[in-house]
Image (cartoon, rainbow, N blue to C red; front, top):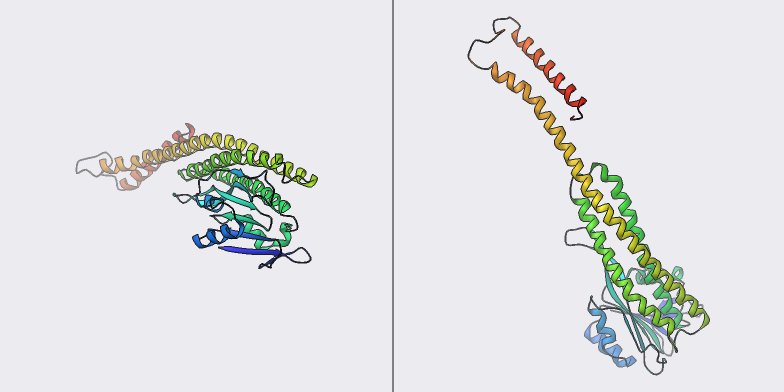
Length: 318
C-alpha cells in the first residue's frame, strides 16, 4: 500500500502528490508491483524495500555519507508493536522500519502497521511534522521510534502494578504467563535498542547529511531517548525477574493456604461422619434407649466440631 502526502502552503500535511513538490510516501506491506514502481522512480537498490519484508531484519544504514543527488540513503530501525502471544497474552514484538531519504521524497517502509505513523495520518497537526526539510522529517520519525519504546515500557510498568494489586488472591499460573510475555518483550526491546544505537550514532556522525546545528541537537535528543529506553528496559527486566520469583512463591503460598483450609474443613466434617457411622450400626449403643438420644447425639457432635474448630484456629490451621 502506498500513501502519498505533500505539504500545503501553510505547511500542513495533505494527501496526494503534486509534480515538482517534495512529498512523503508511506509504504506499508508493498506488493511486487509497488516495489518495482518505486525502484524505477527513485533509482535505489531493490533491497531498500524488500529488507523490511523480513520481520527479523536488523538495524543498519546504507549510503549515509553520500549526498542526496548521488545515492538515496537508507536507515533501518526497529520499532515496538503490541501483539498477542500464542497463549493469548499481550506482549510486544519489534519489527524493522525503513527510512529512505531521496532528493525528491522521503519514504517510510514497514511490513507491519506502525502506531506512530497512523497517529501522524489521523492527526498530523499534533505530530508537528514538516516536509519543508526531509532531514528534519526523518529525525522526527526517529525520535518517535525511540519514544515508542519509552511509552511501551511505561505501559508494561502500569500493567505490572495492576498484577501486583491482584497478587494477594492469585492461585493460578495466569500471572506467571503474563510476566513471561512482558519479559519476552523486554528481551526483544534490549536487542532492538542495542541495534538501533549504532544507526543513531551513524546519523550523528554523517559528514554529508544531518549537518545543520538544529540536526545535531535533535540527533542528540534521539540518542538520549534511546539510551533512556535501554536503561528503562534493563531496570524493568530486573524488577520483573524478582517479581516473577515472588509471584511463584505467593501463588504457592496461596495454594497452601487453600489446602490448609480445605484440610481443616475435612477434619471437622469427619467428626459427624464418624459419629453417624457408629450410631448407624444395628447393635446396642450407649444412650440408645433415651427418649431424646438423637438430640443429645447432635448436641455432642456440634460441641466436638466447635472444639475442633477452636483447636485448629488456635494453631493457625483454620
